[in-house]
Length: 274
Ligand code: HEC
Image (tube, rainbow, N blue to C red; front, side):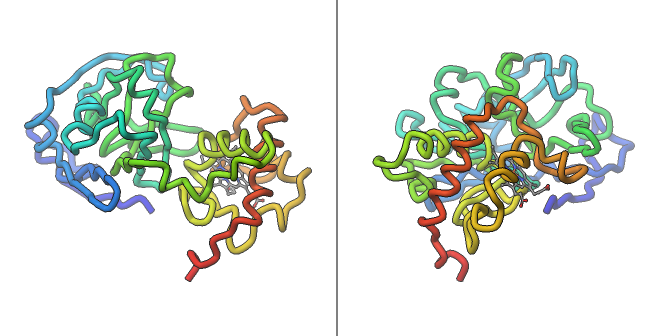
């Protein structure tokens, strides 16, 4: 559930507006194993240089200028050595979880956790309109100065936390055994990259879409033909489905994802339901 706070924007440059916005005190939580550290905007800006850049943002179909702090600087402040990490997960206020392979950040270290879009009216960011949905990207929005990364790397908005997996532990129980078929292996990689942001398996993953393994695995109550069609085009079943269509998936991708889901049927962690 999106928890919003009505805050009379006290920041002098925005004055006069009383609008729906995040409290400037909203912290960014960085979770490292069992340990959680909270950073407020003030603490971030006291420790790391502010960055600013302009990029054509496909979500708005126009150029926007962002102020923020580099993600690598935030991780450094939290004591994370990115050479010891495999992936990080962005936790978003609406339940979205975006997993990102750390190699992406090593290659593009100038990704910024933005707290403000220059020239935004009535809030820190202009709202993003996706079909009938309107989302306020605050409190934090991950943006990249390279326009071509849009759709390729995560650009999560409403970021409230960053989960750093020091090893594969978070996803270890979702990973198929090494001797499973190539289709299951590919399906796992695809699922992690394209589906886990919204869906959980054994309650690990996002909460926008339904859990797909426990207590019943989706392949136990939906047949393969239905699954193929649904994954290809959710809107053809339910108007306004919150599952976005994924037009770039090949038939093979979808079959792999279904093989992986089928495989997980015999790897339920039912104890998690207690
Ligand atoms: C943006 C979030 C999002 C992403 C990404 C996403 N889903 Fe979904 N998914 C949903 C939601 C929400 C539903 C619930 C149904 C609805 O709203 O129509 C759903 C439903 C489903 C269902 C259940 C259909 C049923 O009839 O019960 C399956 C299976 C599924 N998704 C598979 C996938 C797979 C496989 C992927 C990755 C290739 C994926 N989803 C990616 C949000 C998402």
